[in-house]
Image (cartoon, rainbow, N blue to C red; front, side, top):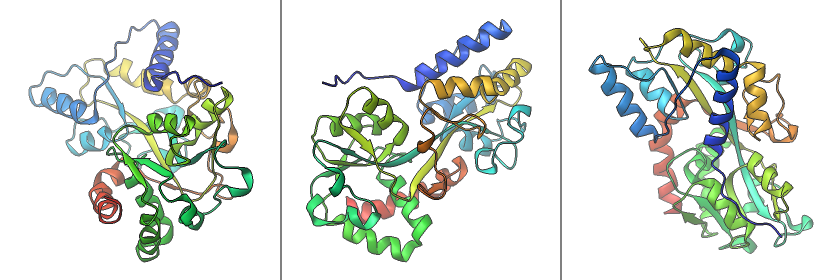
Length: 306
C-alpha cells in the first residue's frame, strides 16, 4: 500500500543546500518563501526605498520581472560557465539551479502497458474521455504550459487542430499545484495526468504508488533560476552562495533530493527523466519567454478548455 505523505520539495532542497553552504563557508543564511508576485514587489519596493534586505532571489517567474526592473546583477558564476545555453541567461542576469520536465503520468492499476498512450494523438482517443486531469493554476506545469509546448513543437495551426480534438475529452482542470494533482492519479481518481513533473512520478512510484510517467513528446521544460540582487547588502556572500548552488557539490544535493540538476555534469538519479532529444524531446522555456508569452498561451488554453 502507498500512503500519500505531502512533501515540501522547495523547503527540502533549500534547507539542505543552505546547511551545506553554511557548513562549508561558515556564513549563516536565512531564507523566506513567497509567491513570485510577493517576492517581486518586496525586492522592487526595497530597491526604490534604497533599503535592500535581499541578497539572492530564486524562482521560475520572479527573475525575469526583476531583471526588467533593473534590480538584478549582471553576473554569471564561474561554476556555470560551461552550462548549456538554455539554462543560463545569455545576458548574464540569472543561472538555472535545476530544471523541471513536465510529461503525462498514468495510474498503472487503471491503465495496462498495452493501453498506454504513446503519442499526442493517443491522448485524444475517446476512451480517455473524462479520465484526464491537469492543473489550471497559473504556471508552466499546467494546461497553459502544455499548450505552449505543443505550439512550439507543432506550430500554431497543427497545435490548434490537436487542441480541438483533445477538448472533446473533457479534460478536468483543478485549481491546485501539479504535485497535488499527482496524488489524485495515485488514488485512482483519474487515469491520466498531463503536465506532471516526471522526476516526482519516479519518486512516488519507488515508494509503491501505482504511477508511471510517459515519454510523450513534447515535454515542457522549465527551470528555477537564481540571481544576485543588484547592490545587495552582502554582495560577496551572495555571489558565493549562487556559485555554490550551481557547483558540482550543490548540484549533487539537488540530485540527491530527486530534482533534475541544471548541470549536464550531474545526472539525475534516474537519467531517463532528462530529455535526450530522442526517446524524450522537450520544448524549453526561459523565464523571459514564460513572462512574455504566458498571456497568449492562457488565452489559447481558455479558448479550447475552459
